[in-house]
Image (cartoon, rainbow, N blue to C red; front, side, top):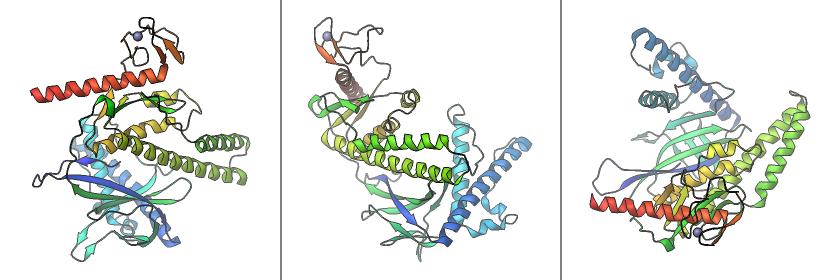
Length: 394
Ligand SMILES: [Zn+2]
């Protein structure tokens, strides 16, 4: 996910901004084998370093992670893959321990990696020498340290001034290869936008419509998502009837994985376009801090978009942030659906959850979701104004 970070050098007031471009890779047979080796070596070095850290910790009570170089003598195959990928594993393990020691309750103890359950991927940093960078892109390929030129299809190109920082090569479960290219650039921070009630929108998560806005607008996810989901359920049903390990079963599993990835792509596309449209149209967006993982657990097959709402919120947040626009999150325990957005009456929690309801005090007729979106917006703006007030008086 892209983000904004304050630069250390405050010389010109610019901040560092990161962007990621995802490309599909078409490695040759030899390159694909090298990737497989690299995935394996990364898992191997991670597990070795973790095991040695544990042993060392028990013996000496000190935290220490050996560097990858230490293992090359006993495991010469490590020399065949990009050294940068192994160094990255060391950095990641060190980082995993840093966050674990800081907050053991929130971040678990680093786990050993297994081929079956862990993603096939490796990351390598770009190093710029006098002779040039180790990693760079051409019109239709990415040059990597050991693999050389790997054929790639770009859907987007870096803008001028973007610096290639690192790449992550990943193999999906259906067997295709992708590369995430991370770019860094220095930009001037955006001018803060001051929202008004007219230029602010409140969004309520909706199972049927993805979201409902306070003005009654809905996202209404396209029908292909529903169709893909039905197809997925169909393959799942057939899989249940097949003999595991049979040729038919294997082929169906492959179809299932491909369709799964296809749906994930469609969903990402929909989420990016929808969040872009909202972030450009409004000066501020208010949402509720819903516990999304709990909501999606309640559904078995559910809506394929349920799991996408968290990503949608994250996309909205950074797309707004980049334009200097506030993203306002309302407390999830605030009774947004039970409060009358006209007179403020809070209904009893036991009141029936009907699609529409009439306020017993002021007589306003409410659509349940639109009313909630209105409350989210009012609450979000309230918070924004009070935070601005306290900033001014400070
Ligand atoms: Zn009322």
